[in-house]
Amino acid sequence: MGKKAVLIGCNYTGTKAELKGCSNDVKKMQRCLIDRYGFSEGDIKILIDTDDSYTQPTGRNIRNALALLIKSAETGDVLFVHYSGHGTRLPAETGEEDDTGYDECIVPCDMNLITDDDIRELVDKVPKGCRITFVSDSCHSGGLIDDAKEQIGESCKDDCEDKEENGSGLGFVGTIIQKTGDALQSAFSHDNIAEDSTLTNRSLPLDTLVDILKQKTGNHNINVGNVRPTLFDVFGEDSTPKIKKFMKVLMDTFKGGSDGGGFLGKIGVLAQDFLKEKFENNADYGKPAMETEVGGKQDAYAGSKKNKLPENGILISGCQSDQTSADATPSADRAEPFGALSHAIQMIIQETDGKVSNRELVVKARNSLKKQGFKQRPGLYCDDKHVDSPFIC
Image: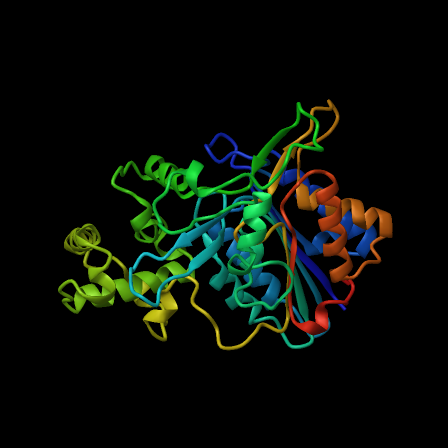
């Protein structure tokens, strides 16, 4: 039985999105995998953006590392992925009536977003008899393996009453263009945390993403409604598959001469002018997207659903899909910054010597975070057969 892992930490140093504890989470998890679970150091791929001697956690590098992890897997292998960094939610852009969901995303250090659909496609390639555990210490992480069965958690739609009473994160509601202060609430409470500790949400608001993309491209016409075309324009061939699918449907409609109805028309004149200019300057513009296989325009929709639940994927999320997770910097001189979920997991593993089931881990993590004053609620998403299986192996 092989044991292989990919550990990803994004601190975004020097940007508006900067966090402090993500690389530390990765290093502690690496030590834990080796000491507690018998992983070999050579079978653990680390991607962090705080040390140039490691592979940088760009969108392309993360997808390549995950693809290689799964491609190398054989029946009986144990696969593990830990992600610490920002999460975000991309709302629908088309305006069509049946495109009403969100794409939950992880945020690589270069902002080349990876969506829940992209992760689901990778999980679907895990060989039979092999399982992959994905720990995501990020915001909006509850739906990160698309369509995975919720075992422990409260979905956004079913949890409105609880949120109203307890003041948990609201997420994006009602409209796709809101100021950060109106769109998000804090995922943590200071009641039981030292007053001089620094706490930051591991959530990347869309307006911050837009600002970073403007700085990256020099294009000040970027807004929430054209984030996907901008990501394709910036990253091209290296764009995530979901973005390419969106652009393929968009360009197929554009080239077909749509006159304002349906997919393209609802995006507006700005997107049409954007594409017209691109094709006039470069006839091959969009080639990476046009070569992408798309079953139908629904494949490009935000929150598009699969027909079958994933069997081999186990997701342990730092919070629910409508919540934010905390990045904590303690005041003590020797204390290192950490992610709230990552820290809780390390404590639980130490207390149990690693002998804990997926269900037990998540329940203990919830209780631990609650006692510390955090309001984020970790979740467990997987097939029934994995609920009481040992965490990792």
